Length: 347
Ligand SMILES: NC(=O)N[C@@H](CC(=O)O)C(=O)O
Ligand SMILES: [Zn+2]
Ligand SMILES: [Zn+2]
Image 1 (cartoon, rainbow, N blue to C red):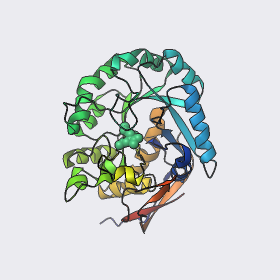
Image 2: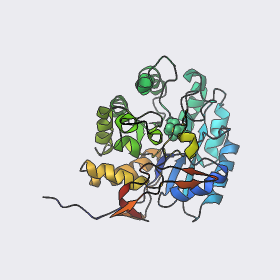
Image 3: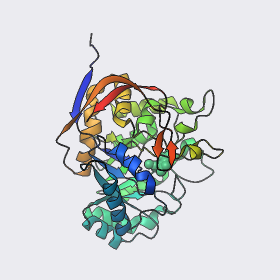
């Protein structure tokens, strides 16, 4: 018989995929991300997107200015377009603060209209990234309207990703926020230069949570929640101890009225309780002892950055998530709004 642990101390975690937005919303998103995450990979899908070194560095300065205490480190990402030049990649890398570039297929997700229309158009930029050692982060979904939304990740893997991986064998690639068994298997079989992030919501939920018994817009995100066999494959991957799978919340706030609408935005807010939600998923799988590797070790190892040297402690303590949080001039409804969370982080 094993008894339940009441406390778990792990190396300070990092979030390898988060949306902080901009302007008046920054003070709220930065407060949440900096409570206990050491570093985070900041997504560049602003309006307009952070497509060049200067805009990414200016965004970094706004994030640093918004943090309540001074030890959170934002790691910046360049937004790739059809026009990104090898020179811009080299300039970004030389800045010392931009560690990756992000490939959004044009139109695939929130604020991706300026994304890439044809993968081959970014091959010169990818070659420069491979040369200077900048990571490629991918939103892996095709955008072809004839492809069913539940199949868009698998079709991207089959028709686009394999080609990128084969063309740039030493480029480090992170397939972001994976949602399918197909993605898990692709990453497992690929070389050590290919890894993936997994969100807390894709571990905790499947499409029934979003669609059975009424449509729940706060579970709507992209790539969309899949059926439970895919959820199971993600849980197995995250809790397996395989260093290719690590934490990326994809916490993506949208104002309440933009979600609860006839045409609601894609994105789920989890930064209010990110590590706590992962702990619930890992405990449910009987794998709390695998949380530290996933949350705190495998990410920095893949990015070739040092692991954090201090710790955080998760205590078993039930609390009720507020119905909403301030988001600049609006409110954001978090995942598990009004529901119980079983863990609390003492930073
Ligand atoms: N995940 C989402 O559903 N939305 C993200 C964009 C993204 O990561 O694809 C957002 O910026 O809102
Ligand atoms: Zn995405
Ligand atoms: Zn995202």
